[in-house]
Structure formats: C-alpha cells, structure tokens
Image 1 (cartoon, rainbow, N blue to C red):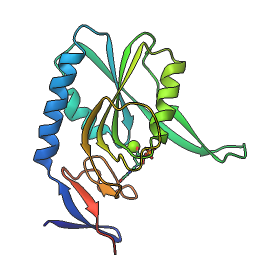
Image 2 (spheres, helix red, strand yellow):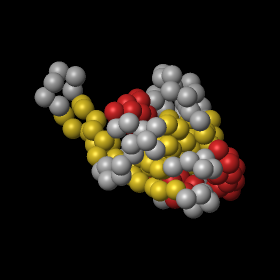
Image 3 (tube, protein in one colour):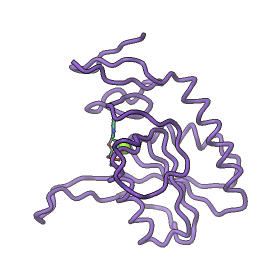
Amino acid sequence: MKEIRILDKTFREFIPEETIQLRIEQLAKQLNKDLAGKDVVFLGILNGAFLFAADLFRRINLEARISFVKLASYEGTTSSGTIKELIGWNEDIRNKTIIVIEDIVDTGNTLERIVDELIIRKAFEIKIATMLYKPEAYKKKIPLDYVGIEIPNDFVVGYGLDYNGYGRNLPSIYTLIPE
Ligand code: IMP
Ligand code: MG
C-alpha cells in the first residue's frame, strides 16, 4: 500500500485516481440528464473543490456557467467568535438552478452557510454535488443530491483536500495513519 509523508504525518492511499475519475464520469452523466433545459450555474467552493469542479465541469455538455466563491474566516466583534463570510460573488444567481460543488461534506456547517446565502440571494433551486461525504459526521438536514464517495469519519488529503495547506495536488485521496 502506497504511503506518503506530509509535514509531520503519514498517509496511506485510500481512493485511487482512477476510482475518483470514474465516479466523476458517472456523476456528470447524471447531471447532464437531470439539468437538461435548466438555467444552471455551477458554484465551486474554494479552495478545496477546485480539482473536482474542473474535472466535473469539463464533462458537462449543457449550456452552463461556473463561478467560484470562498469562505473567509475572520474574528468577529461578537461573542460568537469566528465569523465565516462568503466572498468573491461575481455572478447573479437570482432565479437560477445552482449546483454547489464541494470537495467534502463533513459536519455540514460550511454547506449550511453556503445554502443560507444562496437562499438570501434568491436562487431558484439549489442542488449539492460533493466529491466526498462523511455520513457519521454530518449534522445537518440539507439533502446531498450528488455524492461521489462516502467515507468514514477519518482525516483525508489529496484531490484538492489539504493538511495545513499541503497535499491538494495529489491525484488520489489518502487517509491519515493514526500514530
Ligand atoms: P464541514 O465540517 O462540513 O463544514 O467541513 C468543513 C471543511 O473542512 C471542508 O470544506 C474541508 O475543507 C474541511 N475538511 C473536512 N474534512 C476534511 C478532511 O478529512 N480532510 C481535509 N479537509 C477536511
Ligand atoms: Mg473546503
């Protein structure tokens, strides 16, 4: 089994590149079918989803647009502490079908923040596409419409996902080997 070292941690290959790409092909096929005739904007969530968004979107054969937003954390002045703001909007999403593209859905906190913002901005319809999903960690009720692969509640890197900023360029997904 292939092992790699990132900073102070060791990871083992978990989902090979071919499996990821095959799954994306299946998701794209489904999306092409489901979205036919709709006014669609794909919305990639940076940084993690950049590879998945690229690989998925290049297989979409509809007239569709893509845009990216980023969640920026900053220390708020309120007692609640960290506030997450979605920045980078340059697309009018009003009355559009939005396909949110996420690298991973873990607790669902990030996703909920994004969906709330899309509702405020009056999206017509919101669908979620995520490459990875940790069902054991998920705490929200938002339905996940397109899930690449369900994984256990372990820390993974690669294919856009990072450990302290590193590992995003790995074409396969690796799981942390506990010490
Ligand atoms: P959430 O808990 O669903 O809000 O996930 C928040 C974010 O944490 C995701 O968008 C990822 O960027 C990151 N994340 C969650 N699980 C992992 C993981 O296993 N490896 C790397 N990043 C992760
Ligand atoms: Mg992310």
